[in-house]
Image (cartoon, rainbow, N blue to C red):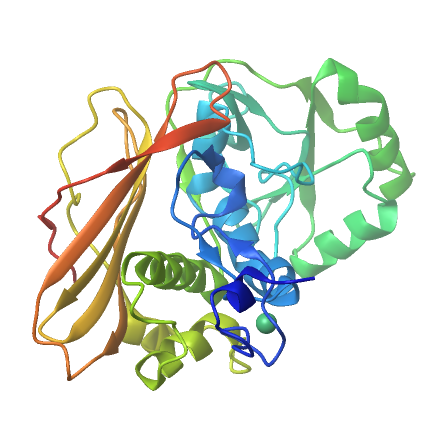
Length: 355
Ligand SMILES: [Zn+2]
């Protein structure tokens, strides 16, 4: 097989992240955000293994454990490829935790966990709520049909609760049977707790996201790869990018290190561009200024709300004295299921201030 890199006369250029031969088409934006016609791609720069496994974990956490997860649900965005369907409100991914969406339930006089099911629509998860009588603290455990009683027990034991406890079981009619069965298996001697069909109307709520460094490394990967699509004079193998390459691909054995993340990533305090007038899109930008190579990424610019933009410091090229900036909006077509979209080149000036 002849690789396109060989056709271009770039034989023996290894993957950006390992010694393997690169053989993939890499889209800087995660596949789960959809397909964008004419979007810039990196050809034969990353090997299949790194693309699917190591980088795949970053994309997975970015898509399923951060604010992108509910936004995808809300706007009905489906992935480019046939990805495994995971409900991010029930299950964590790639080391990140499930998204927790709390709302106050008048009838129960406590917070309950919700999931987003469409635009402005949410419903209660099937869940067990345990209240420590002494402290009054509530703990929420989402329950799924595949959950075993051992897994439920394990989850409860990690909470290190102080008895006595009050229990409440919440379900929808289709989940009633297995939810009740699971509870009876858990505590056969206990009478069935207050079991209730979940409410339908809620006034607002709070979302909590628990991610690891992979979430931020996904920003770094998206920014770095987008930069390489825009400044083709760099292959990405240059030593000025060795630190960002390591940051992207190496899991830090010390765990979550905010100082390390701050070396590369900064969050913008204000939006990077004008508010949306109804469209939904993701802004990517690559920039060289004063010899410093940057990328900027603001996902999910919508009329109702947006995710914060991030700046990614990629490396310093002392030989560069010019300034240049290139950017694109990855814009969704307005369809009932926003699976795909196109790309819009943007003359764009950075407005935001980063911290
Ligand atoms: Zn590789």
